[in-house]
Amino acid sequence: MTVSLVVGGVWWAQGEEPAGPALAAGPTPRGVAAPTGTPKETPRKVSAAPRKAAATPRPQPAPAPLRRSRPTALAIPAITIEAPVLGLDLDKSGQLATPPADNPRVVGWYASGVTPGERGTAVIVGHRDTRTGPAIFLNLNSLSPGNTLRVARADGRVAVFTVDRVRTYAKSAFPDQEVYGTTGRPELRLLTCGGSFDRKGGYASNIVVFAHLTDVDRQI
Image (cartoon, rainbow, N blue to C red; front, side, top):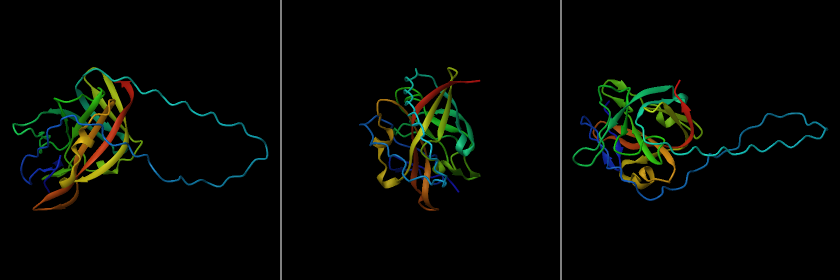
C-alpha cells in the first residue's frame, strides 16, 4: 500500500513522491475544542465528619517561547514513537516534500518554517504506510487531548507539547488557515494521511494533531 497524503487539499498521487502546500501563516485558527464526557465514579461511603475543602491547584504559567533551534527527534509516549527528524523544504511548485518512502521510521519538519518551541506553528509530517508496510505515523489518529509530544532540539532542550485535539479532514475540504495559521503562541501540528483508501484514489483524508507548548526540559 502506498501513501497518498493530502495536505492543503492537494492529493499526493499513488506511486509518486508526495507533496503538500505552501505553509503560509494565516489568520488565527478556530478555537480548541475541550474534551467532553463525564468520568465514571466509584461509589464510596460518606463520612459524617466535616471535610476540608480541597485546595484549587494553581494553573501553571505557559513557558516562554524558545529561540530558533532545529528539531532532532520526536517522541510520542502514548503510541511508543521515537523518530529522528529530517528537514524538508518546498519544491518548485511551492509544495512540501515528504520523508523518503524507503525510510518509513523518520519524520520530516518544514525547515523554512517555525522550529518547535518558537512562537508560531511548527509542522511535522510522516507517512502512515509505504509499499513496504506500516510507517511511523500509523497510529497517529489514536492520540487524545492531554497526550504529550516531546521534540528534542539541537540546543539541548526538549519542547514538550500537549495535544489539544485530533481531527480528520477530507482532502477536498482541507482547512489550510486553521491548520497552518498562527495563534501567537508556540504550537505544533503533526500530519499524516488517513480516512478511506482505494487503489486508484489513494487516501481520502488527512489526520492532523493540534498541540501547544506546555513545558521545556533538558536532554539527559
